Image (tube, rainbow, N blue to C red; front, side, top):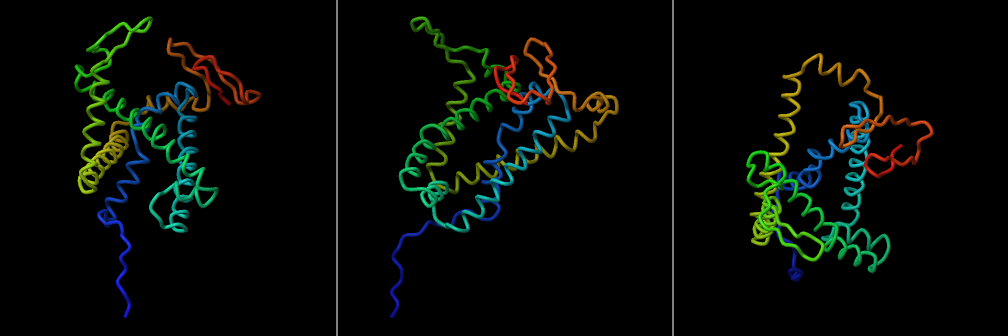
Length: 241
């Protein structure tokens, strides 16, 4: 007589919608609302802005398809840890796991917290970075804590607590926030077409492929592709093509 398996298994708490929103929420973050400004400062034109987004979208889609194939090949809990262990060895996977925990994911969470407080300040000016709550001189450094930093810390602690209570609470938060982000994006697209003005459209696309850098002081630096591979940009201290 066949004995029932006593091997512990993970509980299936996430449905199709929850899983879809989890993946979409991890891909569509605050960066899509923030990064465009940095891109346009470096390329200075609508055409190159769209081109950059198309390239990064293709890269993201390629990565997503690759991870889908890997998850089908190795259907185990652990994600990238499992893939690195199978591709290389346990040491590489172990080092990546701790790097992900101590640096990669923590840095991402901190950046998202700061982005949340930055956008919240437009609705509630009291939580802006300009509202300094604590200012302590520590040697030659002036240690400050602003209202935006405090909001970021509280938000991270609150969401961490909700996720430690179980998967159900976490999936509700994730699904709600992701649906909100998707509706916001679709809303921007829809209202963009509704409020479309011909003169603004023509102004943006007249010199759509004229690449130039925009400095924070309002200065404009003309950039060219030919002969500029690896040229150094004095605008933001980085390399451009």
